Image 1 (cartoon, one colour):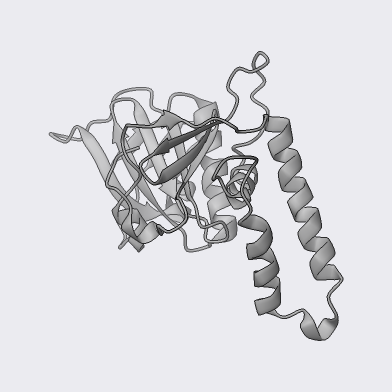
Image 2 (tube, rainbow, N blue to C red):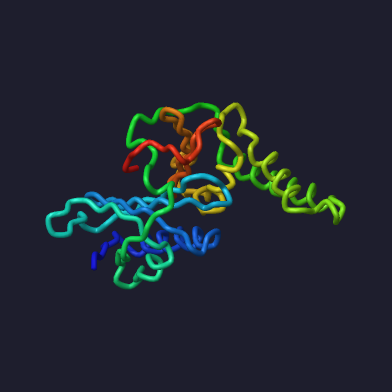
Length: 230
């Protein structure tokens, strides 16, 4: 069995927290793992947000297994979470599973360029809070006979598909980052580690010190992603 040696207890805890959040939205979630050198990248797709979530973790020593210099496999998120050992600071790689369509291809490896116009972290968190409050108020005001799944979904799509400031980033991507624990304060100096919006081709990616969310811009679905590592 392949065992990944994480850099420290913090990396193990953050990996476990990310997997737990993915499982909250999909108990049968799968994740794609890619490890090369001392970096592990974990990709998942929480269905509620229609984005690709990316979490990296540092390894204490370069990945190697026999003659293999890199790892690339899709596994059960639940089984991976169960294998995380906080004391030993390790994670055992479960047996591969047949991955969902999104796991077959990933965002570009490079070519990312900064996109201006992203509000400050506090404003992003306030934006999500306001959107959640609006959704609750609008759906709560519906007559019982109109509170159907179709109507609720329609209200949700209208709110979460709005774009952030002057960017093309939909509010649902920021909501995903917040819900997955990526949008929390970094604790560093003012401005250090602030979220950044980057683009590559038709892809947008919201990067934070704690993880990223990526998605294709309007008109391109997650079914025809560009092959990449991270």
